[in-house]
Every structure is written in structure tokens, then in C-alpha cells.
Length: 114
Length: 107
Image (cartoon, rainbow over all chains, first blue to last red; front, side, top):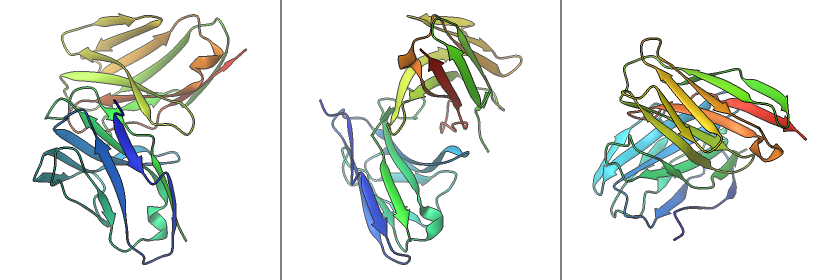
């Protein structure tokens, strides 16, 4: 049982480049979400999904795009990377469709934008 | 807006001592959760306390919840060096996490 798997673990981008952070879970969880963690800022919710085909914005959605075509996968797309998007990104999932139950986190993806 | 704010920001104690960290939140909740994050790792769920509970125990962890004050506390008893980590509270809903308490347990 792998839980929540994030790839890549590390990535360096140049300003303006695009990329996708992958997230997959094998627990059949309906709820999935993306957070970014910055020093002194805690975790901030970017986007979330309560099931396949359903996504919604969190606290800091600008510059990011998501889709949920399957229950297992919830990729996060950076359309045109900016230095302000340098951060550690965490994907999480929950058995509770409303996202109010225990969250299971991936190990994080550390992104640097030059 | 952040639903959970931890206090203190950093705490350093000797092994064997108890560690207490506090969390305040802004709106009514149905539950509050505490998470732990080791350096460079993802967050791990520790405990969930519901709004109709005042206290909950799990091993060396004791969590209290005061809904009238919109606050919660996490007590780690008989701390160990392996407890060194950051601890976050998260109010329910969209899980707005605070900035966390960084706990250092000195052997």
C-alpha cells in the first residue's frame, strides 16, 4: 500500500516554463488536495477535488491548474512558472469526501523557479 | 485566512520533559486535527478531536479542545529526541493549517 505518491521530488525550472506535479493515491479516496508550504507561512491550500471530474479553488489558486479525470490521480500544473512559485508542494487525500477527515500526505515536491 | 494558529512558534525542551503547544482558530468547527512533520517529510496525522469532545488521549499525546475559547492544546508527555518535529493544527473544512510549532527535544 503506497499511500500518496508525488513525483518528482525535486525540480528546477526557469521562469516561464510549464510543468506538472504528479500525485497518485491508491486508497480509493474521493478527496484530494494540493498545498504549498513556504517558510513562516504554513501550508496553504491551492486546489482541491471531492471526486473525479470535480475540482475547486483553495486559498492560493492563481498560476496553478488542476484536473481530476480519475479517482487515483490529481496532477497540479504550473502554466508559466514564476519565482514566487518556488516552494514545497504537498498532495494529500482523505477518505472523507468533504475533506474533514484524516489527511494522508505525500512526501512533497520541492520546486525551485529561477 | 488561516483557521489554525499555533503557539509558541518554537519550543526547546530536555528529553523526558513534557511539551505543550497551543492552537487557536477563528470560526466554529466540527473537528480539529493535529499533524506532525519531520524535517523534509510530509505531514502525518496524529489525532482528531471532535467539537463534542473536551479531551482525547493517544499514547503519550493528550489533546484538549475548548470550543468557547476556540482553542486546542497538544501535550506530549515524557518527550523523546524522536519527537523533534514541527506540529500543526488544522481546523476542519478546507484545512487551513497554521505555521506550526517547531519542537526540539534535547537528548
